[in-house]
Image 1 (cartoon, rainbow, N blue to C red):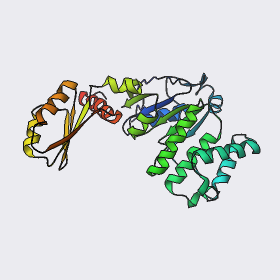
Image 2 (image 1 turned 135 degrees about the horizontal axis):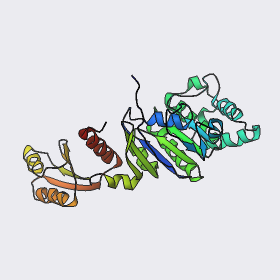
Image 3 (image 1 turned 60 degrees about the vertical axis):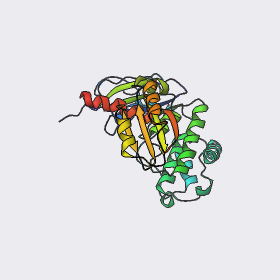
Image 4 (image 1 turned 180 degrees about the horizontal axis):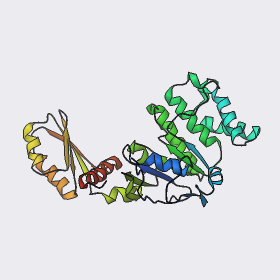
Length: 298
């Protein structure tokens, strides 16, 4: 039976911005990226990269872009340095340009210690970082990153995110997918949330966060969390509540309920500390997707 992976999605990415295409597994993100990178032909509709139609003029569209897809694309029997050389030659770069750009991306992505190592000798995270670095080796105006930090440890991921921001500051347009919402919140100028092949929220990161029901998290610290404290907070009907032995996270939908939470516990025995934070992009993402799922909008 044919599967309708995308259902009339439409979005525009401005030049020089980082755009995030977000959604749960199977939402249609990778299908959209494959269409935009000419790896998959759409059955209807149109897509353009710098005014080049990806169906009618796929070669012209490809010349304007580079992409990191979900599968690693590192030559296993070549050193990292030679991976750069081969990739640069493949894109028609001169030897001098390859040397200059290799030095640049090696420094930006922190790859000095692995330049002479073969691809087969690298860890999964290092291979992924080399793949992303190869993409930025070539001076293309549009870059697609599909789950670019998959398999990286925290240190490699941090260096890669900083490198992506650096490349965007040079004027490149970057389109990325990620299941790590903290990355999207840190990187993206604008984004779209996709579920069941449809866009269910889009705009700047702040606009998308504001499009959901307002969510505020109140973190309460006690000497010990008791059942009595939990019962009292549950009477306020919070959006979500979670706790450990000494901490309670209460998620509410308005400032007034947040104040009710604080007023209800401030004189309790054992109450020590509180923090109030606006909802993260991950909180909002889960709220938007959950509401669509409950509505049965498939």
